[in-house]
Image (cartoon, rainbow, N blue to C red):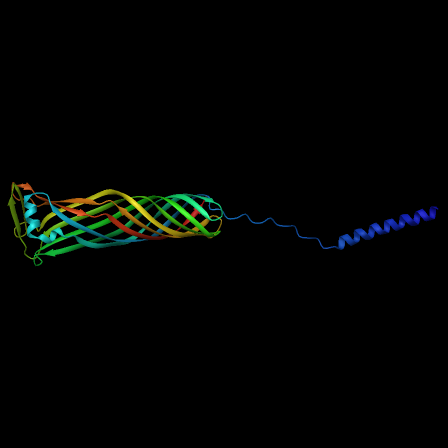
Length: 280
């Protein structure tokens, strides 16, 4: 009986050792890695941009007194506008916040501020080249505060529409002068202007450097190149308010100073720029 018990115990022990050895020889499965979290656009960001701007501008003229009225009536082309193109480089910074809802939609708010070198000028010659009117415009800087509505065709690519409030500082100058021997002397209704032969060549001149406000619309594409950085390309159409510049006439003795208004239309310009953002 003791011999039988010993034999049974030995068999059980041998089976246990064999099972352990077999288990040790089995391949160990690699642990299952958790799936990567989907990319999210939600959060604050800041960045920089650079690009260019271009547009069209015009100015028309209207008299403010009897003397300037005579000048405008004689040189009747003054009632037609001087038209010219503007263009230049620009660059600045932006700050914003995105909120992604669902897998494919985003809303946000962005503000930006850009310095610019957008400018242009034009001139028109009258009466066989003896008189010239000229106008010039410079957009010194502009900024916007815009809402954004975006669509995500893929996890890291964003297309968006944007629009909102725009503002900027616009400098405008205009003159009316004699040339090639032209001469103007008008005294009427207590007002007078004299320019040309024996007088300064500039008959009327004025300038304005003021803030203008308006609106902007546009759109763009943005792509996430990493978890924290994105790059973008954007187009905006900016429309700022119109402005009238008073051109004061050359004094003619003791008569009251004559003047002409140069009426600039709305400051409309296009913006195309590229940039990058860093997500906080």
